[in-house]
Image (cartoon, rainbow over all chains, first blue to last red; front, side, top):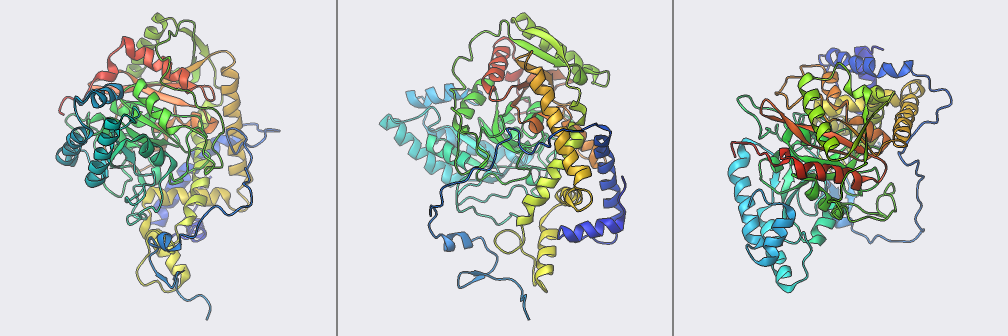
Length: 95
Length: 485
């Protein structure tokens, strides 16, 4: 399976990553090599094999619907690049 | 002092042969004078360490100490430590001061251990050589003329323990990241059963594969570490609620009659002849100690690396979508709009290997490819697991090499990422199956250590620790230290 520079730019956009035009051919080559490696999987017969998402086949555990956390907004926002009045700041979204 | 076991250090502290402040100062001095050549630490927390050591000395004086009270150690920089920079080897988290402790960090703190600092690692634990760290590469203390990699991603933890800059260190393993550096640095490292050690506060890479574990100089020290690290944690929804045994108890029992399986797929003609010779000698040793050796087959093992390079990137692309330049982590300067903020913050904050894996993951999960890649890989994952389940009906432990070579040089894997990925060929299946795996020093090749891997059944950490400990009672490979320290 090979993947061209244009596909790379499309996936990069989906991943919210910027890929320079000159980086695209090298990346497309690297990723095509990885997909070649992965293509070994296609030769395996997996009819009726249940996909395995978790080693113990555990299911999501739900907790009781009770308040357990206290408000730590100030402490948690110390790591935020930009805040104002307890809100995270982003560039203007709605005109 | 530097070669003492955890038990010996603890005894020395309790008997008053030395204080925790003295012990901690010894290690801090070593880090501050010697680590320039290894770059194994990202942060050294002198002040916090000395105040923790003072508190430990008081606790010892009061008689309320645990075996860990006053013992210095280091955390891989993937574990969140309250108030202490936690970078995960990335520029993205170069300013991240966690407001809370990982459960593993809390456990060591409550036991009274003294954290010396945070160790270097491949960025977001993605790598097998430590070359992808934003904070510079780590040098293997066993390097001779040419500098060699320590392995990865827990390369900083491995180099720091091997260089005697800390008695032990925490580490994590997603595809071999504890066992491969343990092999390259002459250490004993254990990846526990998936769900045995809480992942709460451990920066996520591939959530169904990640598992924290010990990096130590002996199986006994690793067992004592696992006693602190293991246990159910309601804060990690994948944590398994199951009793934690005393891993360090009864390590002295004989391995007579224990069945060890050798997967024929891992001992093929492609295996390096020198490694083959070292491992065969180690197998003979275990046989002499009473183990029964059997050939087994893991017919899908060769599909571990391909399945992993769908599943791990898929989970990574989902996990790393949280880095958006808004709530924490790197943010670009003067974003034009929200899209520009996301794009530039992420592109500036992540390194090449991380970007590559996010792209593969996004591709494998995208419409039209999901069934062909992700679903297929999850199916093959079950086949790999089923092979092990069948094998463990006949044997107690599976033995193989840990790595296909000894420590290699920098940039030696060339430009093709696939060459680096094949480094994990022997270790990756245990992550996919969720089984515990341990690497211990099995011999030396041209002056460099090489590990052998013991894989156990689910929750059979005690069994593989016992085999490793018994081997270490009759051999001295684990006692060898780099000569230039």
